[in-house]
Length: 515
Image (cartoon, rainbow, N blue to C red):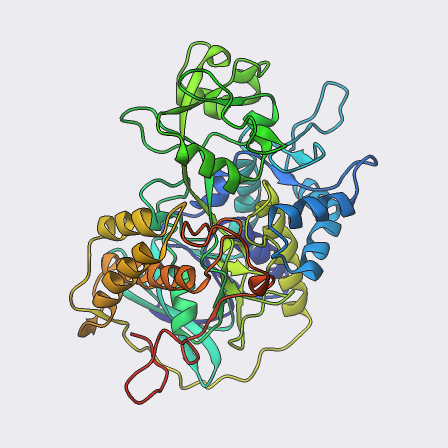
């Protein structure tokens, strides 16, 4: 493989959003997909619950819209949220036509379940609790036939000149460099769950796309809103494993060590309250919290992946210990309807993007919906426009990182301690100062994938911590102990960050520059 080549469309990442847009563009464009691990390893593959969409006559887009903005604490972009829910049925039909096999009932109708904060059972699933895997397997078969695929290459930085993105450069596992120029670059790198020690996210999801976009001059926003999933398996010695919200939708109940219902008196929807509410309730409980699945009929058949992991002889009669874990970042690289960022020719789709449809707290099973809806919107724009003229002389520039950097484990501990489910000014200030200390240090060119990864973790963590410090209220996934109430002046106010306009990043000459 040439270490320097051109492609019409460069897709960075291989989750549902990245693979779907690659497939949609491949009939008319030369598309290259580059992923930091093997093809398809992503949060999308781990998605258990399903995809939310209005596909029955007793449901409506208006109901789905209201459920979404209510869960998002009315911080959502109303226009794009309406687009999201109105397109749901159409996009599900598209997936079915592509070969995705959603689960059906005995009479042949599609099986639908209900999850937290949904008023109707509108979530379609596949393989019981393996929806993401079904979508990924279907898309992988298609893109392998139509796109160039490059695995085990980590994106290090974007190639940008005068506000126009011209490609990106990558580092292989042995440190070999690869430079790819492109008419369009599409970030589909996922969120930032691996900035925390307990997370549902794949090991590859370390906030790379956010850090790269920020360094390139793109606007990022809403980074203070990290969603913690309430029910990560908390068995002794076990690695974190997500237990789908659909288990509670099918009758599972959260109980304390004494057997009392945890959510009684805490929210009208009890165990199906929004995720931020349930996660805080679990975190505030001093003893272990359990998910009682005794009321879930046919647990092993309905949730085969979860039952297999738990390895219980009779999972339907067991109480499973659970704890919250970092799950989904509502914020990200700010985009419009078509995935366009504030940097020309640079797009962002999926969890790395902030379309505004999730507000301050994502509604369950809207993530796969967002991926397929906005992958289609972006593809439509790309196929009907020409890229902005680029400076063809743009060349590789090494990524300079701090000479002294913390271990990834130190970053995770700091984020958990100070930028976790609950925050306060003192802890946030500690995190900002510690992270900033490393960012301000002397620089050297990055020479390994590990250095690039830790630098991106460090930079994204700092952006999240400073954003959380700036929002002096509580809203959705952002909860300040020192400011426990929502404030009117923050209603629909987005904490936006851009390298040349960031109030946290100033030199003595008042110019704007990144640490």
